[in-house]
Image (tube, rainbow, N blue to C red; front, side, top):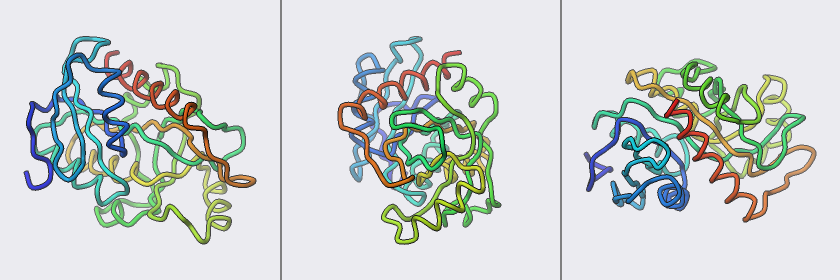
Length: 228
């Protein structure tokens, strides 16, 4: 491996947060005796037995954006990964969503460069059974997410209007890439995100304590879906 340097075994199933700090937090919450799986390039990852079911689970950060997520997931697939769930954050754009809500991506709208470079069309679907399991575990919404490349978007108002018109619930940066690589590699892939921001009618940000609560809920629901 060029970027992932395993120092522990990879589990056949993995949670993929973008943030290395979230990977550490989830490892402490969800794993019994987690061992460092990777620390190269600051992409922290951990493997251990999930407290919920005793089965091996890897929690590996992907970094921000499609290019970084693609590198990490491709190398995990080379190591034998079978099931991947992105557990991230997103900004809500639809009516009826609130800060801290959890959204399951039935599909991602490919408004990013990486998924398109990998041959995706306008939309890429998540694994249906895995998405159903996430919803059954207790999420708040399911539908489409938009994956985009720009966080500080100078055309945000225009883009949000287009995303809402396309039926998107929220926007983030990695789902389309994760789902597309799942298609290409035969790895079951899904995505659940917590809404850390709302973009309409004006941008608002979740508080730190509320974000930690939402992240913990993300991890617990993802493990429950994998254990079902």
